[in-house]
Length: 486
Image (cartoon, rainbow, N blue to C red; front, side, top):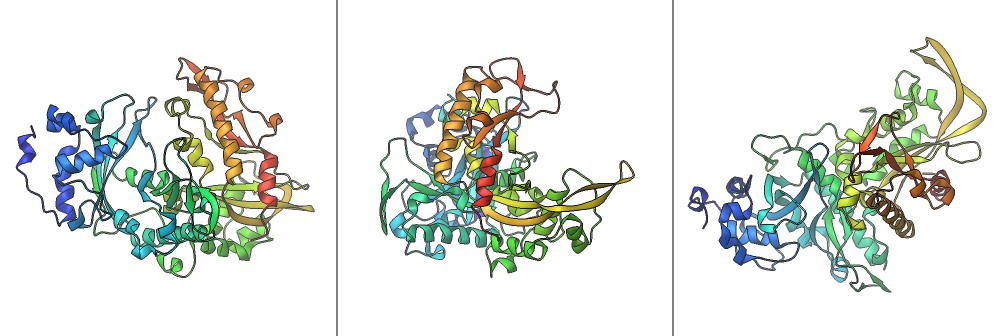
């Protein structure tokens, strides 16, 4: 029996805000606590089952397979999306990307973004975040947050460019080469079950995996942060401007060029300059710090706005990974490339490579900023701590480029992840049980902790050493060597 506190409430089906207001009754409830035991007789299976039951039983809409938005009269789409709760600090994290709609390879080649049903599926969305608990009944998933999210004008511009990039690749007969790293906000994610047969594609005899348009996990994290911690458990940017820390690229710039073209253009006047010359051109003081090369790269990219590109709206939403590299005289990077520490709980809880944290990291778009040494040339930088000038080799800005990990390397990365997961499941969390640099397989695992006392919680019990994901230095060199000067 539907509870009396909202069963008699009427909402305006043409008004997104009215629909959003009505959804407040879901927060803190599951379908079972809200609708009673009779909900069990309405079970809908499949990944979209929860959303269909919410649409039908809570909002009283007839579920159909129409391409228009779920709340057609309000031009608003309903999306139920799962969160996971950290066992270490109790925080919530995005479980997966937000799937918008399947990609029809034969349709996309002749359909503009403006004419696509994707646009109606993501322009305005009622997002219902629920807590996913492994083994729990779909009727008992608790709804935690609600967001009425209207894609900002600039996001629509970037998503249109992502759509066009995906469509163009399909037109070239390269649907089988699509990667989520090809794009900024809108991904072409893998869909289907293991063993599904690849599909035919236009302009090529090569079969391609099923894919869907999706908003990337980084974008969903950006949306989620607006509502986490709010007393009401709700947020909307509908019919209002979205606030952000700072924009890297303006809407006006994006009307003429792609995001990457705008960023790369900003580096051109600095190519071939060393650290001191870059600082002078930027009008900033040269300082001695371990992050100084990463800092000036960020300042160039942001037009002097910030030393941390990770705080830029576009980088938060896209999950672009910025990597600053200094080379040796022989062209080899000075060191291997590190990533975040391995989350052992995530490794154990997730048995699907395509939904893993590492898959998201490795399929993100990378931006490389490369400095090379100049033979027999040094620079002097004053050190505030020692009150003395320090002499060091001069490095000049050599290359800046965006990169996506190729499919062949991703297949090897899956083996890397599978090996790590097997070791964690077997409680063999030690360097001897992970890939090493000596294996020469592009990737390795290495300790990454502040000191010997800095430990991680072992999901098998007790504490263990902290390890992180790494690119081998020779793999980084091959990536750099494969790119021509930008």
